[in-house]
Length: 342
Image (tube, rainbow, N blue to C red; front, top):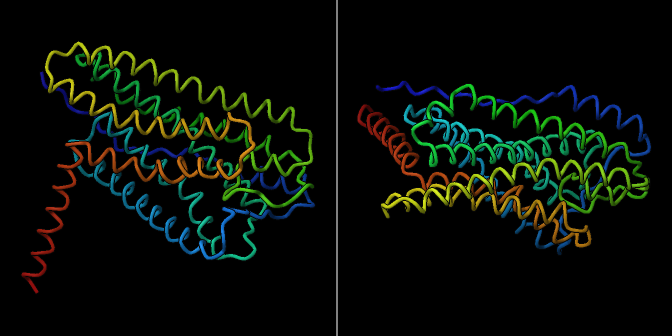
């Protein structure tokens, strides 16, 4: 019997702007001596700022083009109305937004002498970045589970990965991101920033903010470490266990072509997960002794991963390539028709 494929055109953004405003107002009242911060950025010679600006601009342009393109392809091609592409569409949505929280301000600061960011702006930047980066971690775990069901239980795939479950997994990812972000931002901005206004980073992150605080950090570090642990460990365990079962199942496939196709599908996902989690673990679990290395690690998950995701999933994916070819073919046909009429 033929089953009707479920429609997965849904991109969810459960972001509570009231929460951000409330935290910004509360933070401002508690820290009236601080009205803005200075984002130090990269400690390089001034003549290199132009080169860094152009590099950031190129990467950000690729992020915009790749992720908007990926979402457009997934929403317009009916053949891509499957759970895997539903998750990929949301991954592109998350990558697009959290890189947009960081990159524009970083580029402006390459040309700005003051390099300042308001207190409310810093609260908002940390809140939104934490929301999207945590949501991405849970979404990658959901994608690993999706691949586990598709490869290990293919006959039950359409039943187990129902429309309702997919929506719940994505909504749950955003919800966990929201809760984690509210907790982390609230804890961070209860600190007193009387030591300095200069944040030795290119965006507002909680570890650089802790460095310039004159408060007792013992409780805050415990809470931050606890949050990172309950976010990173469960998601990485789900990913590792899923792929252990996947590899075990793939090795049992007698067909060389079948093994190659299965490994090709999963290797790109593992590559993205490796880069993202490797950089995050270095940034948040290694002792904070090398600020410049932390900035480089931050680039991996703020700009490099959002740039690579659409490239990996489009260039290595036959369905996406065919959908893109179909869209481009229609555009070329329409363009030729217009030229003929003119």
